[in-house]
Length: 90
Image 1 (cartoon, helix red, strand yellow):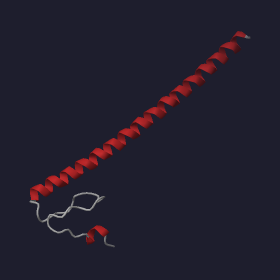
Image 2 (image 1 turned 180 degrees about the vertical axis):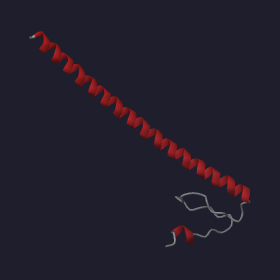
Image 3 (image 1 turned 135 degrees about the horizontal axis):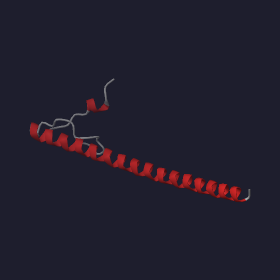
């Protein structure tokens, strides 16, 4: 099955449509070096976006782990208090 991108044809020098996933099509007006640099720039943008997403996920996980640690600490302290009361009453 062909991708809709396979049907996309640009005239030399024509800009990519808005929302196009990336400039990974060779345009006749660009030299191969310019095309390579454009492709590298696109890959770097994707890598940056992925790094930002991963950083957000890491920050969320750290927040969840801190909350879990806080809850477990509260449980431990309550159990220690209960144990101390129980030992004093004997």
